[in-house]
View 1 (cartoon, rainbow, N blue to C red):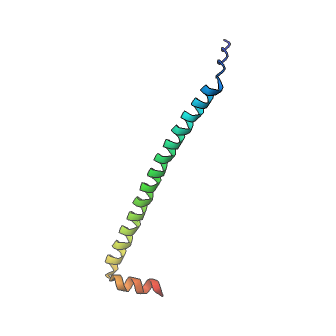
View 2: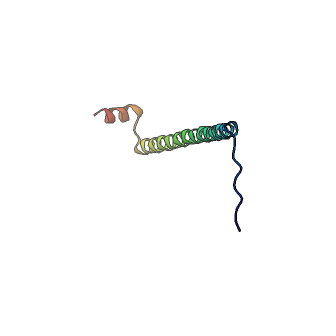
Length: 71
């Protein structure tokens, strides 16, 4: 079955379509950036919790850890 041809859009209609698509993509990008930021913070918090656990497990003070890291 043959498909019908799409009707030609006027330049104004094309511009409106493209503008709407750009806005949609920009909103998607903003949401992805928010998600990325949240995930990065979750990873950071998990790493800090792990580090805190190791420090507590070893019985080290913050000053002792700083001294070890500065060597």
